[in-house]
Length: 465
Image 1 (tube, rainbow, N blue to C red):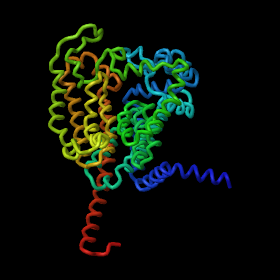
Image 2 (cartoon, one colour):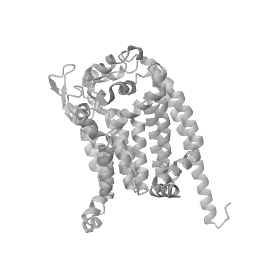
Image 3 (spheres, rainbow, N blue to C red):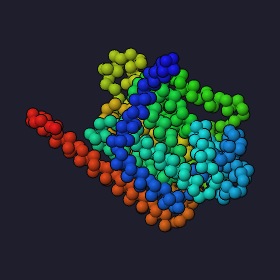
Image 4 (cartoon, rainbow, N blue to C red):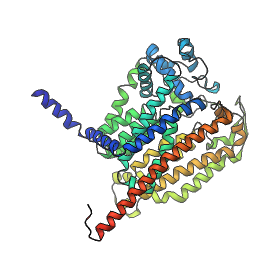
């Protein structure tokens, strides 16, 4: 009987987690047709992407995952080249495709602990190098990506069927997630999964569990930390669980001499991480370094155009996210800070202008913050904001074209070994994504039309069965 009582107490204490699992199960059943379609498209995309793109991040994580079982957390103190040379040549990791480019040759492993553990477990389940292990990693990320779609549906609730901004968000995330999982085998789907779980738990007011899960997300990649200030202000005491999730992994590692220098250099935006600047929005390009030695620079004023456009856009739109003046002045300090949540979230994309190293997909790192906005007009405006920053990123390449042609663009295009044939593969991926989105969107509109007819019938006093 005592065992049953203990089990009951455990269940009672974890009601929030159980509700989340029930919600996931129900959503999977509700969206089963779309998820099957998504899985079919993803499975078709994996071999296509693997043949047209050199997925260095995935290959590198694969190599470090295998090395973990030999060197443990000591891999944090080894460069890519050192790991590739130390592992058995039968693994095939010394082919030059599992290490970073030469201009990043001195970088050690910079991903946080939870990401390393994930790839270590994945390579333990499917050990050894060869052509199938990379596909296995992409497959795992595809499963995680599709779980993310379920979590997004849970967070959106009825807005998924009622609000156009919600469908636009899902469409954008689907393309991004398909590229990151089936097309790249990157860590982003796993980070987003933990982040979205934290948001679901936060929505359920399970603040301790949401903080702990957020801590795990930050230990996979750092960017979910932007949600910490909001989580903290809503429930300050629950932050103990966030720091606990950090302490149980990071502190023991540092005690044993594991270094995170490369992670810190990357985060602090130093030139020691990379001499190249790959962010076309970075204002520092006004003094563009001359590659490849980067020992001198030249004045290039067009580099300021992206930030000028962004500041002008921000000044024109940020007022929508300000709280009502009278309510703000009459509120307590705590309520004043909470009323500034929408403005804080809206200003987050501006972070991308600060860093030297920003890839195009980094823009979607901040997309999940949309679920912390309460008003639909704020959510719709946030999507527009992300879209504008994406366009500015692309325009920034043209503003800084001489610099990017001197190194960053050729290096980026070097990840596509098939040359112009890559366009065919990319076109297939785009077509598959568009087909999936159109089918899903058509079904959503049919449901929306059906709900409208039911509402009109009920308004006329008709019995709807």
